[in-house]
Length: 507
Image (cartoon, rainbow, N blue to C red; front, side, top):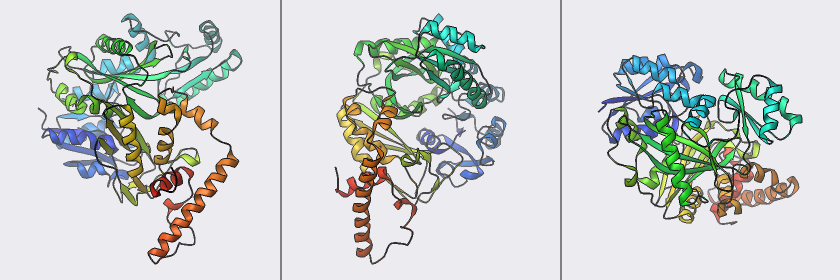
């Protein structure tokens, strides 16, 4: 077994990986940028190496500096987490050439599944169901329009090397197709340095359902059930849950088998995720394969009891799984909310700054994976996710009840967060019923009550909250500042709603 592992990442995922490594008796090495010198993952590691300035392009994305840090500290393996270099085939190959184990799949698997048109072609040969679309990238807008008309609108124009919703356009008619096609190409070039795009049928009312797979070098491949990731905004996941509330046992079993089939088609080794679109009739179509650990992996760990990071490390060390598909038992249900330093009242803009208070929830069935601490500063340079809140319950209702309770307990001040926004989503009738799709959040935000009613509600809540703050100030013998107090006190409907619930003023 490895004696020392370097984690080539930051934030909550670096801390989460370190926890499993420490449980395994493995020493940990953190890398950090100058902006992350006081970050939690640096404090948690046995050793830490600065790899450059704040910009990720000058630090976390420099594979040669990461490898140099591994050699300097004597790390025998590198865990990439997710993002940054986790799906970089060149980096995985460089690790192998340097004699450092890459805790992830082979460079070939990363390359094949990372290039979406190649992945679709390979999945078609393997018999994996695909959304109708073009098998290869399309160069000419006029030819692309002709093919789109054959497929039938609406369609999606998608970047072949894309991800995270970049280089993606929904097109509903021929009239808007060319502009959308060219726009997707420009965005793809800017984001990925590759302007190749392809076209696929837009599945109406789709759910985003993914299957976790795990495979060893001996060819043993299993799945660990599904995760529903349909609560999204701008193609970014917000809330995930397992099991999918509308999936039948028969479809679940079929999806699991297809996911295993897809992994075997690329001789996959390690932890990965096969993503599908699920329509209203429970037809499912291959979307992509993520050749890394997913942000939402904790809910799978909660229902199976399997530590995915531990098994990633064991598999990279050459160990076999030692168990079969029939040995995996799902228990209960789990939900994850991604907690962001962002302001839902200001178009969800990032809200970096000093964390003056951090009081995470606890109690039965609650897990918090965090990359921050009270007194830490959320930097402006990186993704604004600061933690993940996960709850487990005996069934979906129980897991959701625990999540609502945990959100009420969670206190973060000094910056804006989406805590109250999560609570509002979890109370929406469509989410409670489980009858939602990937358009749920965008449609809900668009259809919320008009500005006048919302401003009236904000004014009423603000008046109640202001009165409560005055009472508190008088009780403690202090007055409010001329500018309304610290930053966390600024008016925000989402935050006011959450706090007033905590105070028992509203339900």
